[in-house]
Image (cartoon, rainbow, N blue to C red; front, side):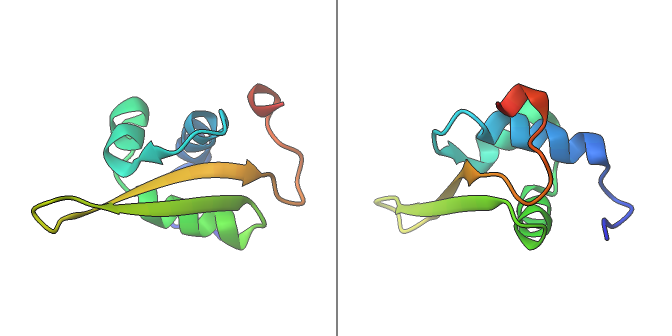
Length: 83
């Protein structure tokens, strides 16, 4: 079940960014989609079977930067823009 603070359209925009098979930093995803709840949306998509991979990079100042990519779709068909 999707919380009320994001929409199915928000999820579709996140999937559209991730669907190219490249890793995208959280900040980039937020800037491209206008969505703020990136980590929550990714967790929700994973719960529904989407294979979303993550990696982290530790910068010289110790900050951790996370990036995500879509590795495969869940049990429901992928949106057309991901095929």
